[in-house]
Image (cartoon, rainbow, N blue to C red; front, side, top):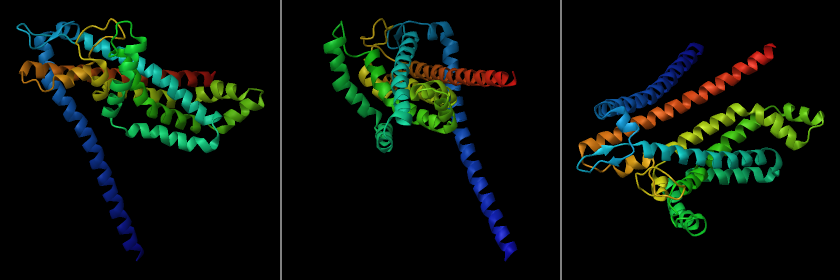
Length: 302
């Protein structure tokens, strides 16, 4: 009987290991297939057009008599929108997480967190509709000097709301994982609650908060539908927060139905640039986290 149970346990263990291995290989395979597809179809177009003309070109006119495929305006717009959205989202999200962690009544923490998490389940097209019918008219009527509500600021506001659940959830989990002894020790040494939270607990949770920022940047950089509905659509170099412009992702989506082969290849090449941006972003944050951990180790040795 004991041998039978041992054999049954080994079979279950092998089956579970096999399932997990297949799942991991599937995830890795999907990433490789997408990457290979982008590289095989996008890199030849970049090489044929010229890296400078494609990435640094200021004109996107794929249907002109003399087509031009410059994506610099879309790159700059994407960076502006992402940067503003992350600034708004991280400031509001981190402040919300700190409030829920220490200053909010315990009875309200769970309901408030659930309400914030509900934002993650709302389809992006709903955010786009809200931005198009509420935010854009508000900006046009009260803030825009040009009478245009579409543009970078509208897209950044919508995206900042969309990334809030990620920032709040990850930041709150990171703050909660810090040992309570850190906070209590700071209070025992005479710190106020605010000082103990912002000077002791928050720095100790930096690693997790940074991970939340990385996820937020990735979400903001890759969002398409909501951005299309509020950013405008003109492939021009951004000169104002209130100007019809176009991001890389919205440019890909808006041109996806073009039947011209060169345009399709140009859009795939834009995907390659977007992929490179995402990789550089993750590598940069990884180096920053690694550098910080090495500094802490050195301080510990000293």
